[in-house]
Length: 596
Image 1 (cartoon, rainbow, N blue to C red):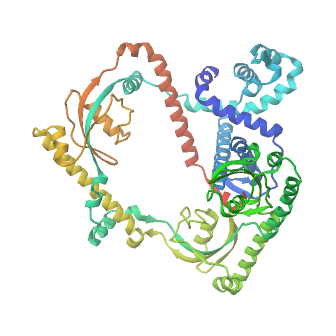
Image 2 (cartoon, rainbow, N blue to C red):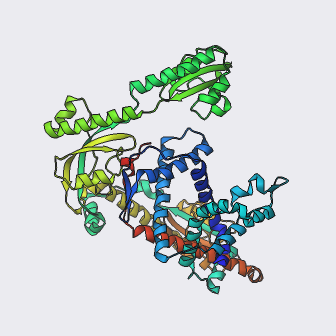
Image 3 (cartoon, one colour):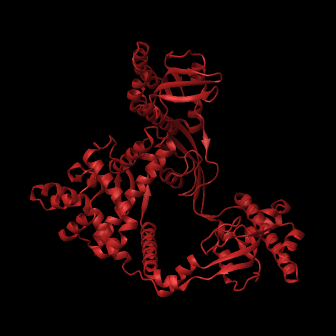
């Protein structure tokens, strides 16, 4: 087992140890879980996932991001972290089920060998294992065999154990991977065999302005011939009212009172940089709140107006902007620039306000069921929005709601006119009404007309590029040089440097069909026929060929075989995991149950 582990440790050790150390940091020093209700945030193969379990993953990744980027984490970044946390949680659950299925166990000897061979990075920087500022491996080994340290090692093993089980599972999955001598030779040639190509690149886009829009007859014919592409499941449309999770006046006023104390301290002579370092909720805090030099108009208007009306050394009263409340100190003045520092208190939606917003949404739902959706919205001056087009269970509902399985299920399982209870999403709460139901079948021509017109235009440009390339190739075959042919037809002759099979061809890109056609040429000055690729057509000419050095192959074939094997193992494991995910029943209710 450990022979294979030693081979695989390079590509996988970094990821696993990072996860392992993050787990130690979180579990030993990260504090408790957040106060989330025990709602189900998703279901994986019939297992309900609680928001508290998910929040453990999310908060761990969030802390890492805050350590790397400061506390100023954008909404987009939070969503990215949330998605990554769900992917990690999903992987842990699916893989742990497979570990149980395969009956994977780790012996004490394997555990000892692993910890002896691969001291955790965190322990390598621990003072008790250092000598003259460097990690002392002998001290580490001595500590492992010291009976007095048994409780510590037992605790450490508990954290290492899950990852070692994953190693052993991985070994079983990739154990059948083999590489043949032919595959090793192909990998060698792909890297070492090189050619230099001349080429004419006829891009599809060159003909875009020459192609007319599809006629009604062409559009109808394309739709009829490709109708299976446009099969759709049951679909629905909704009307909806949004209740944004925005801070209330009380939330703003509370922060206004809090930042007043900072202003009072600064006005009384307290060190402004220290105040910023202690209190500011901005990534400039570590620099004493210093924002550097900036010109008028670079900051948001209220902040900008305050700064450019101040004198050097002056401290402003709290200034309200879209980001919260600022206390500003002007540090310097140039002719058209100012240097200022600030303390920022962000204003976030309090739990009390969130509860109130939820109550408004619930009250609207109840009243709308009694009096009517449109009537209630008009009575309370709520704006009604609508899904832009019909959606299926996984489809885009609207730019704001995006995809949401709970809302889709509601719309697809209720009659037209049915009004929902409130759905809670990341940034707002929404109440919906089913406005339309469409049975499974085919999208209508009108629904897909723009897509068809675009596809037909792309097909016409591809055909024009191919026809032009064919004409140029025939001219070359009839005696024209590449330069003469390109000049006649208005294209450019280009040439590569020496490239291998994995190289990027300038202005063409990395396309195996292009490089493959180039390497299929066997003689200098030999010309290929037109080679179509995604964005156009090329005609190739062999300018130079450098054969691979077989003596070099003999020298490196063992290491090359190992690299090829590792790549095949990684591909095999990746495919195994993708199949595991694709065959699993996974439903995420993240947008409905998680509050940022």
